[in-house]
Amino acid sequence: MQTSASTSSGSVATNETERLISSEKVVGTPVYNRAGEHLGSVHSLMLDKFSGQVAYAVMSFGGFLGIGESYHPLPWRVLTYDVRQGGYVVDLDRQRLEGAPSFTANETPDWGDRSFGHRIDDYYGVSPYTF
Amino acid sequence: MQTSASTSSGSVATNETERLISSEKVVGTPVYNRAGEHLGSVHSLMLDKFSGQVAYAVMSFGGFLGIGESYHPLPWRVLTYDVRQGGYVVDLDRQRLEGAPSFTANETPDWGDRSFGHRIDDYYGVSPYTF
Image (cartoon, rainbow over all chains, first blue to last red):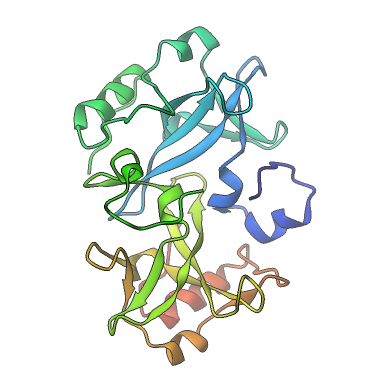
């Protein structure tokens, strides 16, 4: 699995272009805040299975080697890719992230319950994801 | 990495809902044709990094344990998820797939060249993917 966001590796030519990027490359990409602090990395993406639209990027946050990690779904729109840092930038500090809707590896987020998604959208101040 | 498309495993409740599905679950999902023949599986997704729209699902096809495999990008719209088979169904036979735009593990598809994408869209008879 490709986890590097380096722009100098050979695989980038294969997987990344001006507009298109491979899911292999998105997963594992670090997430920073505007102060340049490393917050976590992209763990997975939640897609609309009919339209193929990414609704949420699930960010892993905290923990050590996967233990104690929590998963924070972020609306796709709040992530901005920064070429210089080789990662996504979000306008969030740790504290705000700690209070965000999240789940642990042992929990089952109820994606089927629309209010879960709406709670995420609300928290980050984006318009609700509509299907 | 989740590679099963089973609808009875516990992880499905976590990763799949009526509308949303985890990228972890899409990658590795088998692809069948309308005759029920197994063609390959989803290797990765090519996303529009700005809009978050999945443009192509890259299907691995042929080979054995990753050796001799070729990668066939399919427009997302030609894939239909079939709950009964636990996989995606495409209206293609092997012969048509063999003649489709593809690349090998050692090749670099030029995603930056729009004509590559247009060639894929043309081949499968869908309107060109626009950015």
